[in-house]
Amino acid sequence: MTRSRSRRRSATLLLVAAALIGEACGESSQPTSPEPPSGSQSTPAAQSAGAFEPMTYPPDGDAPCDEAQPPDGDHAAYAGSIRRIRAIEAGTVEFELCAPDVAFPTRLAFPAFAVNDTAWLQSHIDPDRSGDQAILAEVNGTGPYRLEAWNRGSDISLVRNEAYWGEAGRNERLIVRWRDDAAGRLAELEAGSVDGIDDVGPGGVDAIESDVAMPAVARPGLNVCYVGFNNTYAPFDNPRVRQAIAMGIDRDRIVQAFYPPGSEVASHFSPCAIPDGCSGEPWYEFDPSAARQLLAEAGFPDGVQTTIQYRDVVRAYLPDPTAVAAELQAQLLANLNIRAELEVLTEETFLTTVDEGRADGIHLLGRSASIPEASSLLDRHFGAGASKEFGEPIDALVGALAAGAATIDAAARTAAYGEANSAIRTNVPMIPIAHAGSMTAYRADVGGTQASPVRYERFATMMPGDRRQLVWLTSAEPAGLYCADETTAVAQVVCSQLTEGLFGFESGDASVAPALAESCEPNPELTTWTCTLRTGVTFHDGAALDANDVVLSFAAQWDAEHPLHRGREGRFQPFVETFGGLLNPPRQVP
Image 1 (tube, rainbow, N blue to C red):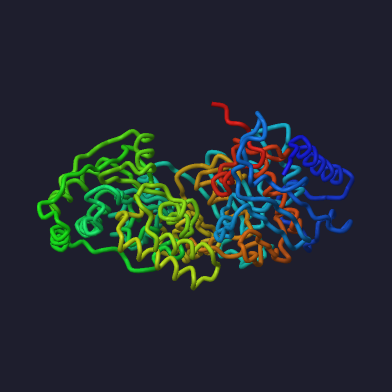
Image 2 (cartoon, rainbow, N blue to C red):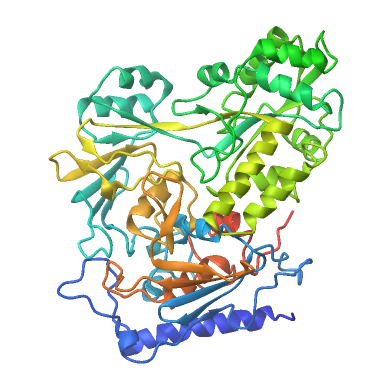
């Protein structure tokens, strides 16, 4: 496909300019403050004035999915997964993708992909300015709360949205406050000045567990730390050696000693919080006697000599790399007579060595899921396109993952991922150690408490005893509330109370359900998803939701040259990480 960037930009500008001119001429009368509308809800004047004119993006053709090289010196090659977005009619929007994607609804569920009203975007984003846009501090969503006030440095006040399309909130107001020290958060909960706290520190676990007035809720982590092998190097080319090590490591001891509250010993490579993550038989139990016998049967009654390679870099899934590596070294020697020398590599050298299949001993690594979907962790490590980290691919595992990715049938996907997990257990390309988690705590009389695996608690479902408002104490103040251009969990959890996307996460769960979409149905190839919007949904200012709102909300994030591609930093990292890259990406200067 031939593409003209100047023509694309001109068409985009014309679309936005036409909408702005229409607004100035009285075709739209949306207020710029998200106060609740008085009286009955009504459709926007722009819709009532004439027929709906569906928007398509890009306006002059498809995104260049097959672009292998940069088109010119000013831009990088397109690496994204979306081909086109178009409104079919007011209540229907269609996403065309560059490749099949069974996990597309899960991607839509992140708060960063909330739908904004067209007139609101146009009036709250200045194309000529960055960094201080009105949209960073003012929110006009469709969620169960609306923004009442953001008192910088103190708190954010959200009040119940009385016109919410879904189930009404169980509390009248949500107050979000912040303190960066875990001990201080716990002290406030003990004093009763807040109703719930996030990220209980290690020092607070005993206090919470001994006090019935402060029940804790563990938040499972969507990550995994593992011990890996490459099956092309002896003695790890022998599956019985790998199985022996799997039984000879006391993973409970590692998690208890070195992981934060809320963490769990991994029963599977994927966390159980991810749908289908724990299908199939769980991992081997710790049995050093059976492990030594199996190692002897494999031809190594006196153990082996090897290395443990790792990088001394803290990650969520590995909070203390050196301590875990030393513990692993000690256990291998004591339980299996495996003498392992610790080898610390620089991050770049370590990752390159592992990915290129040159790690000839044991390596300690991990991964966080980009989305809470089984393929997010499994495909990258064990699928057809996986690196050489674990050596030769396991055919049964590759086939099972392909089957899981090729269907939206729930039973078939569960069966496929069960086969994949069983193949991992049998072949032991790695040993899953831990899923690093966290912990929340609440006052005892708070009903509906939860700890969302994706960190998006739904506070509207909680009832703070006989109090009218719920006070939540988190770790930091968000930098902005236009979450399309925010990456912190604190910002995203606040946004998720105010705004909604086509899909959303279930309360306290990592599974997704339709939100502003009634449904999104794919074609047989899983390359086109057609979404039917929920009827009767209004934004906080009374504007009615339509398909053009969806198109523009995505286009403003997706296209680096869109006039409304403005945020706090302008990186729109959630979109890049979820959908592969921006349209018209600028060239990266070394």
